[in-house]
Length: 126
Image (tube, rainbow, N blue to C red; front, side):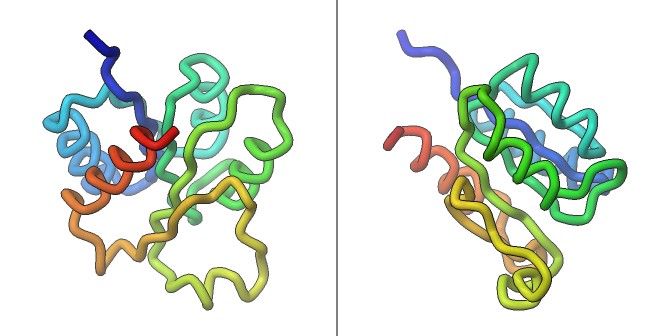
């Protein structure tokens, strides 16, 4: 019997955080969550989830900074996915998306079920 997949949702909007946590939990994931970048960094170091879904606009440590810290950290690299209010072109105007990012989703255009299936797919390929 294989272990359950693990994911961390980093989202400061409590409604969206709860929605995504429920969808991943319903899909038999172990779900960790954080509402700010510093908590996310601590949880990453503690739990080492297989995947991380990161909002770019989060308090204390931006999603961009969090992704950069993950990229240079010696900890095991999770599959990183961005979930943003901005389209990819707008988001990249002032920042470069780190190589560790596998996918980019715009919140308003993303069905939570689709996100869960994508993460499942990435984990199964790893």
